[in-house]
Image: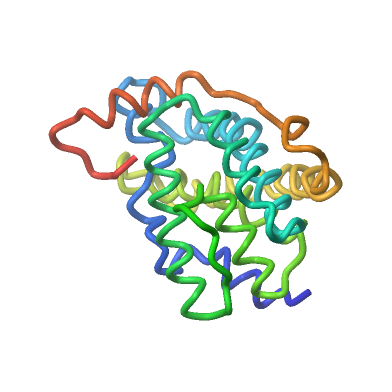
Length: 214
């Protein structure tokens, strides 16, 4: 497994549209739930343990089970009650596949897949394994909102990256668990929910003016 390849896939500068999404942070800021670095720390930890855990599991599964993407995609759809979040996930999946195919031979996945499924497929095409795919998914679940926080709230980027550094061990833990369950039946994969993210996404989708797509 190439560490350099993993860094390419997890790089926030990858032209896969991640910069256009805040991971629900823009809605949380508007609702007054995230106002400073301390609030952001709680938001990131909560997102990692819910959305991040699910994304890591499905990315690992998609990496390990080439050709079983439809079932994984359907399972992830069932775990995403918000239509706005389903739309955002598929938009990011489509953009990631486009970027991935510019670098590696990524097979066709049928309909536009959810982002974690696309991530797992691209990781496999790049020669990475389930744990590396899960690391990229869990890492992205917090780095996207962290970057958005600097733009939305004008937070100190050094303080924000300190939060990310403190989450590194948790990212590794979640990725290791995801890799260990990569071949579990879809119905037995994590299904942790984040209702406030779902509600916020539906409200955010109806804003006339917004900085981020989600």
